[in-house]
Image (cartoon, rainbow over all chains, first blue to last red; front, side, top):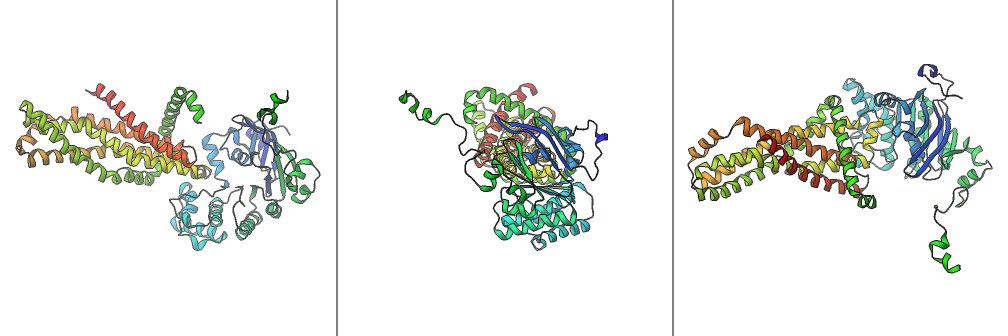
Length: 282
Length: 255
């Protein structure tokens, strides 16, 4: 599909994907992160991006939000090319995107209530009464209305993540990006987060993109899984279909094999030469 | 990072100065936007200013007392102890007030600002603000920078007042100089424009420099515990050097 050149040609409608990534290329230092990545995320879906550590899954999320600009390629969200937006236009777009950080990133100076109220206070002039109601509604949705007056330091990891989720949905965004939402959670907290992701998607129709390794968790929420390795999309499909797909990538990743297309060894010079055995043998 | 630093520390240093300059321009650019966050600005002025009062007042008192003792000795060689009040006041207003206050603020508030912003960076709080469409430059960096510029001259005034009080304590109460001579000579010699305002200009500039360095070091601190620690140290080291160097330049131009 050729990329439309002017914003007018790209008026989004319900049938176009919410997120379109085309020919994404990124180098960080000497390492190539993306080498021509293409992917589409349908509106109203839950999409998981999986891949071995270090393949740039978090980097992809940072591209989607314009925190990081790619070297080449385009990232369209709701028809707008994030890579070309000005700082102000980017901030306007971000008001419609929720982002859940891996470590929750709550503002440590503020209470739970004030953390969730922060975006409202910054972008609206709503009366205090209304702010209070919105915040309590969102906290109720994540089951933490009773924790409103606690400080972030008093929360467990799972609770902090739920507060961060409440903060991310305070503006009813069209898209939520979850960066490793399952890491470091006990089974109970994991189930709570899974249920929240599912509920938000089903009741509010929020498109969700999540990045993670835990296939057992991912298969319970995701409609579609993208497997990224070596800077490219190597496989995609519904979670269960993907797990049984017969490609070396899916076999290694979902079968958990230590060696395969993703090598066990980090690139290194010849072993014998490095140990000094190369000369001796000669 | 360390190897790269050792290889071309000069280029690296120049690059950092350039980065800091661009950062300064970026902060100035968001000042209008950051005035929306006046509550945050007030909180920072309180933190940099009011919270530094105890240390600034104590040091001011002692500096004034020492100054009076030393100058009394020197002036007595020439038989000019009557000028003690004038000399103490001039030294404080023109030089010691702005410089020592700036050094104290760099050590007390500058380090705290660097560590705070560095930790906010390390815990993704700055990125989180950006994702909530709140410019961290306007919400975090700019109010802290402005707070330094506002608080520093006020603190320098307090320092000077305490210094003169300390000088009076030693010169008049202890060493027995005439009270009228002490104040009379001072008020007739010290000029508002030449001495007091020059000192104020200095402390405004020092306030800008100290808070710029503190905010810049915090903002660009590597997101590790070691990185934040180094940045905090660098805030004190660079601030002290720049304060003293800038003091020389400004003194040369202002006198």
